[in-house]
Image 1 (cartoon, one colour):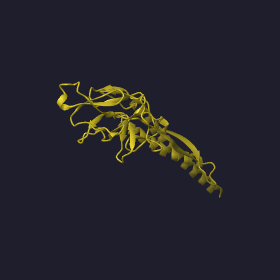
Image 2 (spheres, rainbow, N blue to C red):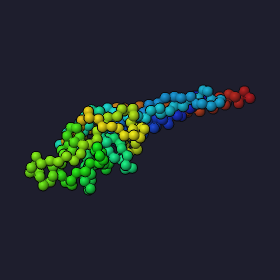
Image 3 (cartoon, helix red, strand yellow):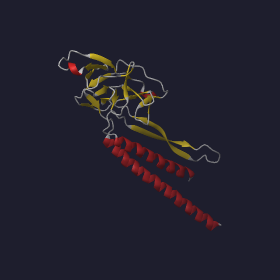
Image 4 (cartoon, rainbow, N blue to C red):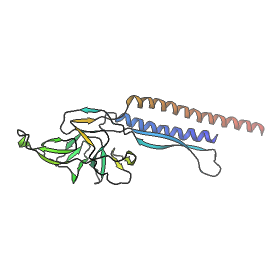
Amino acid sequence: MDRLIYVAMTGATQTMSQQASIAHNLANANTIGYKAVSNSFRAVPVVGEGSPTRAFVVDSTVGSSFAPGSIQTTGRSRDVAVQGAGWIAVQTKDGGEAYTRDGNLQQSSSGLLQTRNGFNVMGANGPISIPVEADITIAKNGWVTVIAAQARMMPQTVEPAGRIKLVNPPEKDLVRGDDGLFRLKDGGKAPEDGNVALAWGALENSNVNVVKEMVSMISNSRQYDMQMKLLENAKSNANQASQILNLRG
């Protein structure tokens, strides 16, 4: 009886947690560069005297799917998509370094190249700065080239602004933060990787499979109902057992 109650109770709790992850994925189905959240469960015994038959269901892994999303051509000069494996390094609000696949870049009022969420894009020597309202091109290897506003009629007059820091740390070493950015688990900084390539004038779509997430949501809903019925059965069995004991008394 104890095992039934504990497994059903904790199973229902973790099922609701997984439903929250699925809802988060669906909400970000159209978010550029988003990587889907994934969950897995396992049962663990309750450690303690007098409870060897009890077990909990726990969320053993809250990970991410690093499968690439589809590439969408935009033609916008400040849009880039990471081709294959790799990440764009950005500066966090606390001055640290984190990584994203969101290449929908923009320019701040002070001229810094940023993501659409306001994180500065990192170069070899810090954030990359470009002249306000200047035209830019971004090469496959991350080099940002500026075409000055007064030289638009002379496209051969160009000036390098810096090279976007592109990295490719092992996926197992990455952890997602509350801000949606990925960081190294040890808090360090990943080295530049010259093999990471960008597609200019394009964006990577979210890798969320909407159909799969909807099926999972329906499946979890049914699983939650089943766990609630198990708890009701356990309560009914306990009441019947009490009635039998009272009759014997």
